[in-house]
Image 1 (cartoon, rainbow, N blue to C red):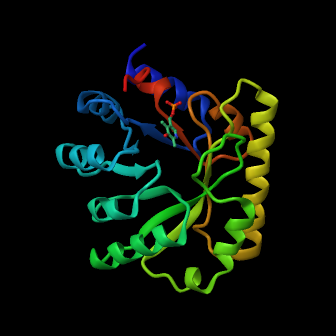
Image 2: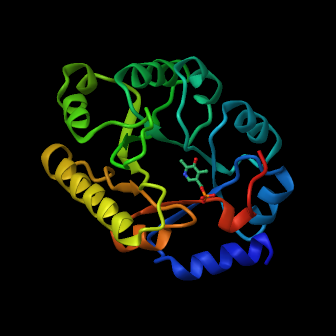
Length: 222
Ligand SMILES: *Cc1c(COP(=O)(O)O)cnc(C)c1O
């Protein structure tokens, strides 16, 4: 199937309230334009260098989302134009984002990455670390950044029950954070969960944003 057919099929499976982030990492501009031509506007990338190149070459009404781990020293390259940072996981990174946002005279939307999967990755905050961050005075004083919600990944497993449990837990934590800290903040409303292999389970558990790459663009060659 073509990129355009893939997108149409995915969209027909998604509630209209769930946003589709087309994960175009490693894919050429032609592939992105095929998706763009049928109305896709949100694209996800995870390498700063690739993203800045694509930003320069492609239409300016694309909303670029950075979905990977972001190094503090690279924030400055994407701060002028990035629409959403999905995976912020430290106060240090957030301070850098804030500084660059101020320099660019804008506010940058972001999500905090929660780590609950069983894989040993060093990225993402534990539930405990998430509350510590939200409670800290430094966090509360930070400027020109706007927290829109939480992002997470389930364990990479074929065990659907486990994935479902993990997404359910993430949703519970999201609801608790919303209730405790952001009850009156209407735009704290995004839950970025779900990829090619598990997005239907994520949507059932309350995802508002799915990040889908290979099911749209085909397998990646690194
Ligand atoms: C690559 C990537 C995706 C998309 O993965 P697919 O399995 O190709 O859909 C989603 N989220 C993150 C954080 C990624 O790095």
